[in-house]
Length: 366
Image (cartoon, rainbow, N blue to C red):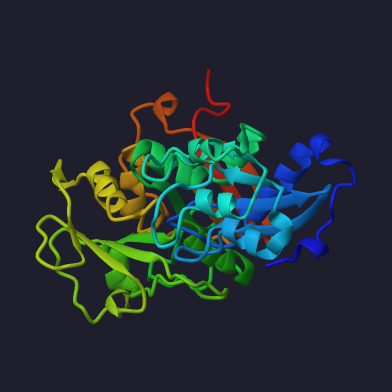
């Protein structure tokens, strides 16, 4: 956690730099891996200086406001708190941040977004009742973008879904004989683990477990909480000898008929599982975002159902010519009916391409 003294502070008076301080709070909020909780950052300002800073690092750890108040100590009295999300007002694994701010003697609270979670909301009203000045909506769009996964999940009551694949320049994920290591470079593979940590849950189909026996854990970086591993196994036939069942991370096995404690029963639809029901079921178990890693049929199912919120594709500069594709689903009857994406970002990733795309029309045929 950076100290307040180590940060570059705006020189202007507090009244003139409200957005500057919120910008610092938003930057802080992007740190850590708090899934399934929201990203939140906080800056405590007194006399035109940041006297305390904090962010929510991981689920189960102290909230951003508490970290910032601890950093500020007695200097928090009479200060202003800039928070990216309305301070919580409920007793969970930690106490209400609204009460912590009141007890610290905070004079004013400026927050970007109202909390859409009815269980935790109400902090602004509680602060106002205690005589604290409350200002909302500061840099709301920027704070929204920094916390889009959690906000989308709470509003829709289903997890935000990211589809991720590592593929060759001609769209293959393996050779015809199944060899696939390594299509992409070390930097891309590490970013894949960052995505796992950010989402807090990783989903694959039964075939991926049988063919690759993946761990589906976060490696190459330090995390407090490993992501929940979700395996789509309709008939529940996977052996417990596979590494996803090794007990090193939470596991949810999605089946048609549940018999075990970590199994999730999902409705059938058109001979398969109802993926919309799957998302509802795992959301009810605390999952707010999911990284769908494969295989091609599983990713294709989410795409065809319109349930993917973002694509992260890592493309290695290699040509296989033949082999399985990263996406398997029924083709459209016409080109104009094809699923089209909006390319949000393309960047080189130490020789690979990292493409981020969102559902929606791009410049397709007119």
